Length: 270
Image (cartoon, rainbow, N blue to C red):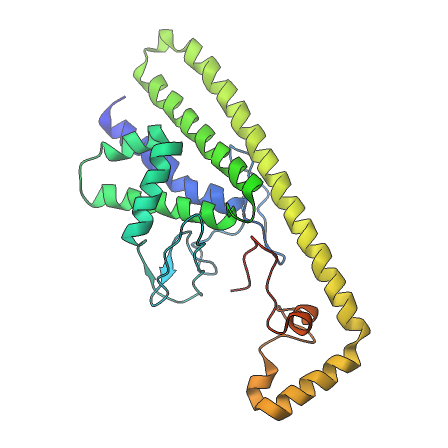
């Protein structure tokens, strides 16, 4: 494969990586879902760079917390300025690529130092951070394993495509057979991942519906509680959109003594 073609392929793969990972991210509230699905069967959701969500791995100014397997990153709010990933995050991402995406890491590492290589490192880091955020190893180990399996299969496809471009047309049939088999495995893994994420979402909806039903049955008591809090604490007693409606949910705040916290492994409200 010519160097320019290799770089173009790497850009294409790394560029779509964050969106493919973000596509499978479970939600705790309704969110738009596009009708089409990419190659691996993971259906895309709202583009994280459209101004309403953050780009995977981006951090708002002043909110620079490292992200890794055990420390999922925060989410910036619309309108805030973004900074590149932290150096420690880039290093974690490169280590992850070396282990799970050796073909893509080799292609990236072979590029000459400069703006293009740094930009691709940032893109790869965002994909890594979003995988860690949407598939937390500590709280969702089975989902994390499937997401890593998908990453490995994507890399296998990348490697075969790279090899295919180096091979004369009259000698490509065997590689094409291997490539189709790997693509089939990739689609299968992607569908399995979607099913797992959908199950998590369904469980979350069921739990929130139960809490809502409980609060609806005790609305007068919630009014009394909120009234007392407002008298005692003024505006602070309102606590945002907690008891009685809004995105935070009533039962969670009443039963847990604070704003609603989503189930383990689920992203919270922005």
